Image (cartoon, helix red, strand yellow):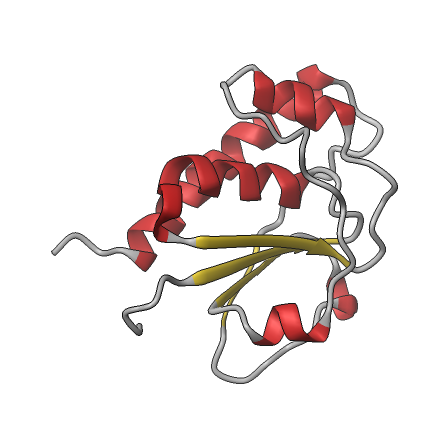
Length: 136
């Protein structure tokens, strides 16, 4: 990897739940070591309130984030692309690191149902960080 910081793009359909929670965790756990982006193939009007609440419970505020339309450039400029159920809508670029995280969609669920999704995302982010920054 180059000496510039890696860019990670999280993509789901609505960019309102899973990808926003993942971006929030990565910003929280990596600080400024990683450039974090998130987007959706069909962005929602607002972030899922249950996702906001679940993240607030662990001290992470994602209320300032807005669902964003996935662009070709955003994907092309990212070092790692983590997809979460956007299927064929996610572009594929040769030479990129891809992971598809099979996560339950929090859309329409209450905060009780979103907590385990939030916690699974945190565990995956910790593994991702270990891959991006192996212990020297």
